[in-house]
View 1 (tube, rainbow, N blue to C red):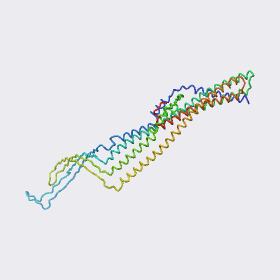
View 2 (cartoon, helix red, strand yellow; view 1 turned 135 degrees about the horizontal axis):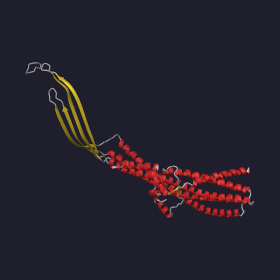
View 3 (cartoon, rainbow, N blue to C red; view 1 turned 180 degrees about the horizontal axis):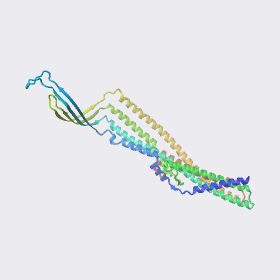
Length: 456
């Protein structure tokens, strides 16, 4: 039974070592966070769509969509007609011959008519409707830029979260590799002691079990890392199987700088800025609606040409007539009463603006709460990180002393293994605490409107 178990563990160990060797043989390039952000800004699908939306808004706010330019239309036409006719003179006598006057027959008489014209229309005054609509389109462009900024911030935060998860798993792999190496040395030592009668076979089997478990944990973590790298490649729009190493060094924002960001958060928070833009748009909507109370004054002008080609008839010879016309005029249109439509539009626009003011109060309250929560989370996670750093030092000292005592035979393999597990947990918890604190900092920076202004 023991031989069967020993063979099984050796088989598992050999397989694990082979897979680890294959994984370690792949040389990966270093992907810094700045480079990851650059690739995301260039390739991410959501950011590209947001950029296209900005281009549409830019086109909409241009002079070609303002209503300030005149309209010029050209018209042209041609008409062709052919006819045959017989004109009779009943009872009429030809004075020269004294005979009845013969009928006049005209076959395939062609009539041609041609026309062309240019018509110019220009609105001099429309109650300031186009003036405020032009301003509204410019503000809509600003709003679209803010919406694109929000998309970029969310994408960068998503990128950073995945990036730091890759870093955390990379650090965990380093911890587990070191743990596995210690467990391998323990197997070698246990075999050596067993051969010289200083140890039992049970200690050897326990050591082999721990090597197998450490190998499995390392393999599982490597698989998690591979999956997370694919998640990162999706955000970067890279090939899914591209491999890379990430930077595990984390820098935190100095407290004085963070305090300055917090003081200016109401001026830079993207949600608040979007709401203020919506309020300005609502104000322009009211002014555009009020333009319906005022008259519209416009200029019109046209230049035309007509040509008629008439065939000869029974009484008139054929002729060609060309006509050229030039006209200009001023028009005034004043809708004195439109059934109350303008009044209704103005009232509804004012209600919409009032709703935006209410939403502003709600958003201000929510942003203050979110910043307070994010700041509290950030400080808490920094404290947890500091505690975990000290905890690693404590467990490292405990493990080193346990390792010395284990070599001297003063503690059992179970006690040594427990010290080893405690050190693994302490190191992985410290790694998780570090990246949790950094992500909390990035969430706080996003709420203060500074996420895109800091160096990572």
